[in-house]
Length: 378
Image 1 (spheres, rainbow, N blue to C red):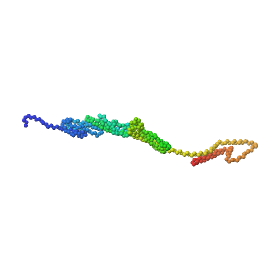
Image 2 (image 1 turned 90 degrees about the vertical axis):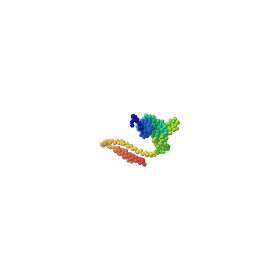
Image 3 (image 1 turned 135 degrees about the vertical axis):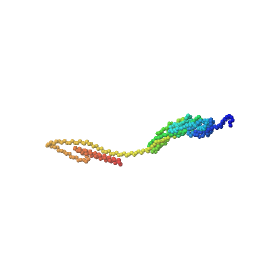
Image 4 (image 1 turned 30 degrees about the vertical axis):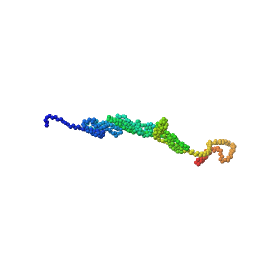
């Protein structure tokens, strides 16, 4: 009961609220199990895990931890902090090259694409187990595979990392196409071998500084034909002073330079000429001399008629005058085959005689020609 003035002072039992703080990775996987903190716990008193790392499944890409999201603060309630990362991507590519052999060196190029803000890298080139600072060059025919390796350093405010890249490129030097033809020759058979030592490049050309020598194997002796076979031996011009330091070099034509056979640099198409031996021709028999035909008789006909004898002039008779007695000469006997003197007034027989002579001459000529044809047929 109240017996006087009394002052009462309140007393309390304090209870502090606690809240869980959790740290997770970019994929919400737990990095650090949830832990309870009193309300008002400062951020410096919160247990923070070590900087996490993130693996990359993409070549040329790396991730560097870039802090927590959200930033860590004093505990005022439940909190989840997620790791964040900066992505850095770079690439390295090589270009395949295919060229025909031309006696000069050929190489390739590699291209590096850097992450934004970075332009430095360390690149080495590897061929046949050897490392080179520059991409090697290749002269002779073949297929060469070069590998480039690049290392690029990247960083941010929290950490740093390296990007390691590797790429391969092929340098193919193809054999040089060339066509060479040998010459042809022919002659009549004489028992000795026939050869023809000539050849020329008909398509394509030698690479600068290269040489070629020919070895001929085609030959023929008996009548017939044979290919003019040959082979080409390629080499490279080598200075005499080089020949003294390189055991494989033989000036001025060396087919083996640096252990490589120059013949492998050429893809040769051979075109063989033809060697021909003809049989000795047999002279044809001399044809018999045809008989000389008889000379036909020559007839000369004078178409001009002989002048007629003048007719006697009759003397006019005088009435009562005594006439002289006409003396008639006795007719001489005719001789067989004797030409008779044409009598005056007998000109009417001339054309008939000419016709008879021409008929006889034609008959004689016909008989002679017929006889000659029979002799030729026999």
